Amino acid sequence: MPSLPEYSGGCQCGAIRFHVVGELTHSSICHCRMCQKAFGAYYAPLVSVRGSEFRWTRGEPRRFQSSNMVQRGFCADCGTPLTYEAPDGVAIAAGAFDEPARLPPRIQYGIEAKLPFVDRLGSLSALRSEEDAEAGDFLLHIVSHQHPDHDTSDWPPR
Image (cartoon, rainbow, N blue to C red; front, side):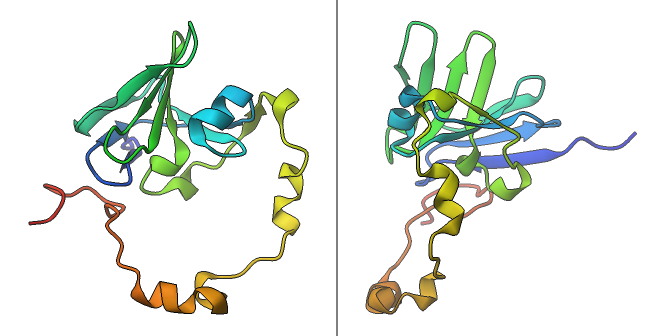
């Protein structure tokens, strides 16, 4: 019998980590205004964990009741948006997974609130970080305190 895929992830500071075992086939983008505000972004990329084995492995999100039907989980330490929790199940912020490229979106919701320029984002001029001459000095001196994209026995390192 083939083994089920496994995923891990967590918040930016590492205070909260999670692990998922199972097929994750329902990845989406939600454009509704509530998701825009919850993520502080043009849209919210989400991955449903319904039907999988999901568990928090370090810490647990703080929650905000964003409506009468939905709670939003986030890291109380760094503010990373983590969950969309509704009566029909839980979805995890796609960017919180250690390997978000494994979970491309398959559908868009809330398109009535979709911002008019979102479909043109791919046509904007683009630079790799090291190609941005104005940010060169900044990038040369930046030291990341972000948790790495893999599980650690404890965090922050001692």
